[in-house]
View 1: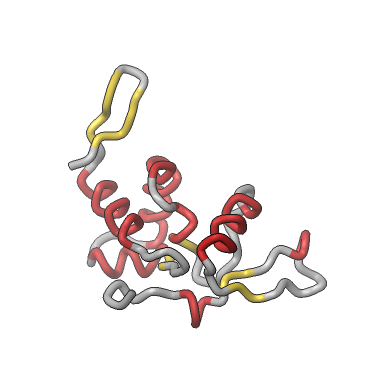
View 2: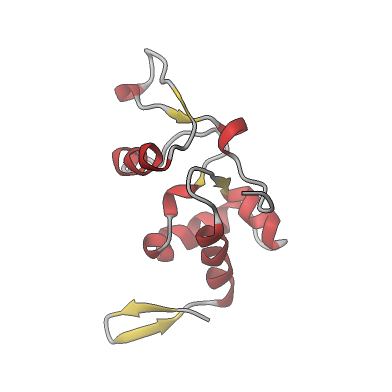
Length: 118
């Protein structure tokens, strides 16, 4: 079980959080899994629970590889995530003219990882 840094030293993560972060760490560069995919892979919880774990504990893992099912980038972190996607070669779709800030989306059919193939 991994430890997360805390104010008074390392804090032991809840077992479910540890498993979610382990899946996030295993996603290859340039690929993504949705919150629901991670829950399905673990056969436990759901998208909201995975999202909560990523919000609370995901800073130390490749958080940008766990995404929304529609491929939109995480609000407030779009530019940081986009830099990671471009560096890793994650397939993206050009943003439509009406898209706020013209931020691209992840090309989910091409970028989605099933957890078994690189």
